Amino acid sequence: MLARGFYGSILLLCGLATLGCQQFSGRPHGSEDNRPEDNKDFSRLYSQNCSGCHGADGQHGVAIALANPEYQAIVDEKTLRDVISNGEQGTLMPSFAKSAGGALTDEQVNILVQGMRSHWYKAGLLNGIDVPPYAASKQGDAAHGQQAFTTYCASCHTTGAQSDKAAKPSSVTDGSYLALVSDQAMRALIIAGRPDLGHPDWRNAKSGHPMSDQEVTDLVAWIASQRQKTPGQTYPSQQ
Image 1 (cartoon, rainbow, N blue to C red):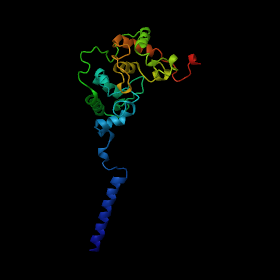
Image 2: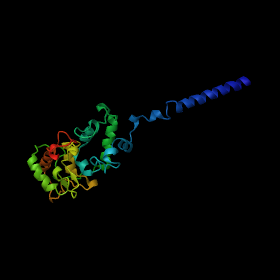
Image 3: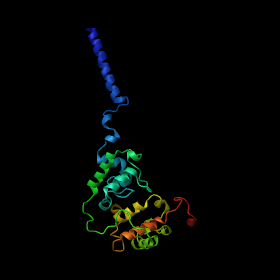
Image 4: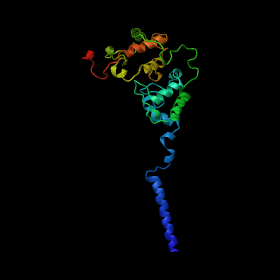
């Protein structure tokens, strides 16, 4: 009788020890169900990977507003997938796909793309409207771009030489800003605008008429021509 009680106690202790090891010794409860690659929820994936730059709800972030239906209308799913997977050269947008050094599987990238489309894309939004394409197909003329800046942008934005005028909120030719934005990112912003920040799209510029594809291309060319070789450093013209 004593022997049976003794061995029963031993078995009970072994069972408790095994349970303890499973819970506390390098094996979090349910860890087999919580691997990063098992995350298939759009909201969680977006919050963990995108919200820091693009805003918690796809807007009000430092980067372009993904929740802007006009942006979603001009960019196709293939481009979204490529940018998420491989990043965007000339910007702070990193690569997220495992194949490019990131942490997301191809399936998770697809979940992000499909989630953005289902939440923020509005079918037919720009149907029948002459909208400049997402990617430039023409050569830009910087001289004409400066004229476009004066016509469409100067009432709100300054150039570097005007940056001391407090009435105008930002300089689009600041060297540090231009070091963080690509030509493509500028083009997308000019076309789609930033409604979350009060920045108009290509149709609602101060001139009262929409910008043409060529004007957008020329404007990007002029702004890009202002890039400095040593952004963030003291420029000779400012000494």
